[in-house]
Length: 301
Image (cartoon, rainbow, N blue to C red; front, top):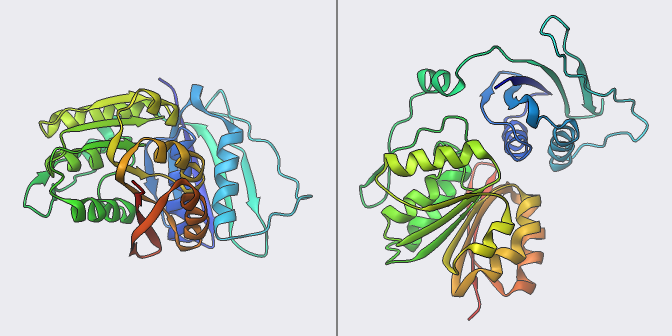
């Protein structure tokens, strides 16, 4: 499998912007991410590379902070070199007045990315409130347990423990960390899905590593048509996807069911609340970790 290496430079460097960009790039098909002092590097299968999706991820990141991008600003198209000897093309985004993001696309060295990732990264087991340990090998999927949004979701989930035989849906499961935690905290069944094939495979491996089982499928929120009604639905995704999928989430909650959301910042809370209220979702709790936020909703009976 041929990978492309995408190198992103954020000027001036902003760690929160790098986090948002990584989450959006994951939705666009990128998998392994490596932070740098000036931005980050991401990898994507050449067959999965979509210039429009990458540019949209950049535009959404800039809009989050926000920065105005002049409509008449000339932005050349990205040309992915077929031969590594051809220099990559740099594409500017943003504006001189504020944050800007540039990136280059070039063929990545041919190597075993899973083996490389595991050799270079070691992750300690995650301790749950009852003392149980959760083991995760993130590989190319987002969700090692070290990111603020994952910590927030684990915090909200732990507040509901013991889960006493609950049915749980893990939307955008990534490594599977949240669904595994739910099972260890007492849930009886987990239905998980992700749009990324690598994430599905990684989640399957991590469930086996922890001696757990779940129904894990490849796809987007349309997968919920085959899902059971849930006592708890978990979604650690970016704001735009959360807003688009909130109606599907609400329709798959049992009466008095819980919806736990993260993957966004303070300015995103207002639009999420505005979208949730007409769906019968009532805000129960809000947690913060640095710039990141998490919301706990409960649906009406």
